[in-house]
Image (cartoon, rainbow, N blue to C red; front, side, top):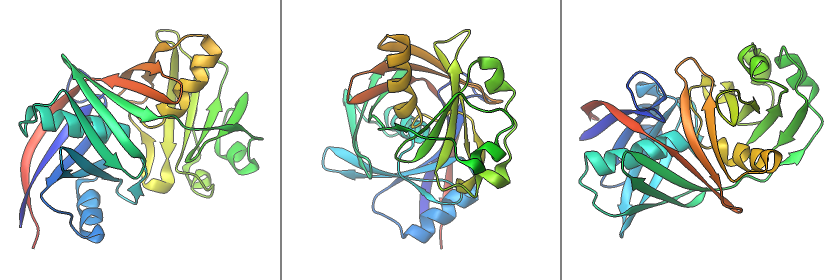
Length: 261
């Protein structure tokens, strides 16, 4: 069996930056171990598979180590491939997923993701997490999948040197560390070692947590965000109340074919 596969840099307007994702369009679903094997072989932070369902699509995401509940950069990358490589002509794309209906729109060179917000509660920083981080956060919140840690400055975010081994012992998908930005409204870094990703380059799904928080803190609905990874990424953000919009650009790096016996 031969399958098309693409590699896309998401949340960037140039190659070799943003977050890279592999995209594999399917006519029908493959067994989960096969999709997991493909994701492990591509070794991207996320590999997305989608199958057409009526006028929309069902999408699933895998890291090299686990199936993901929600993934922003691979959804943006999948939409980019549908528009640029797969001949999709609709004004918007409806992706059904484990996280419900995800609506994607294209406006010029930008693709906008409409995601449900994450609900968070303020918690005491777990002792294991204090050990895992070299700088103590001002506040700690727990969402449905991730911890969100708030710091006092962008400089502290840049100076974080997490202990990934210690992080793996904490039950969570990942850890979003954030602060007010100097060149954007807010900045972040995201760590997910338990899912095979020590540091993610740009994490769209984490902004379903970050956007509502910073919208309240800054008193504004429309914001700009930067993820301060080595590759870096830029996101335009909008708080809609019960949902958020996350916009960015994407660039295709590779078109190819894989063969599965």
